[in-house]
Image (cartoon, rainbow, N blue to C red; front, side, top):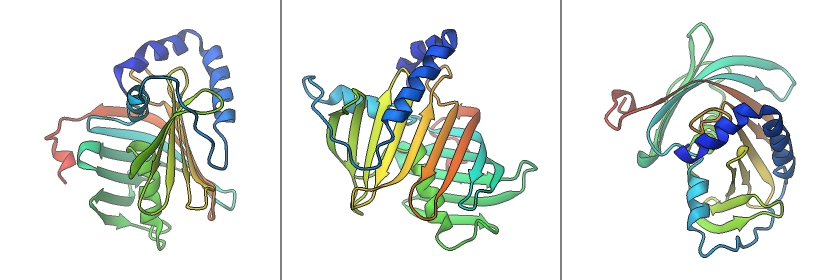
Length: 240
């Protein structure tokens, strides 16, 4: 989400067919279900790689509004609107899910602790708040934990690998021509969550994001960007 993405985004608008082809290759190669091997980048140090991995997440506070399509384990689908406030510098994220008519179904905020302001059925199921906030954080926030490796995958894409105290491993893969992906693995090295972001908008903000949960219960989220707004650090929405 930095300025470096702008020339690429404009290139995609000029040659959408080429970008679509590249996206299909990227997503096919980024679909490994177990921990892939990371190779040295061949560069002196990994500073540029770490910076490119971090650049896929908003550095400044933002508010994003998306149209969301839910794919449930039983094959059913539903739609909603989602609003996310994110401030990575404060490790704060606030998620609101509502009907297209504006009725709030879910409202939760994580800033050190998780606070659920509202949850109506089926969003009040045990453990739902923790799951959905983990999904939202995986999409919009840099991974928790320590950076353990940085380099390139077999297919040439750059990758940064993080490991947290709970034993989860998170790989962030970036390609400025296409977009980015995030894979999260459990402590046995099996993929648990996957994020795919398609960057075509000017400014590097993804126009479409897909999240899939690979372990029980399996479900998916498709997010289509409606609005992205950069906020000032003292914006009142960040303090609620």
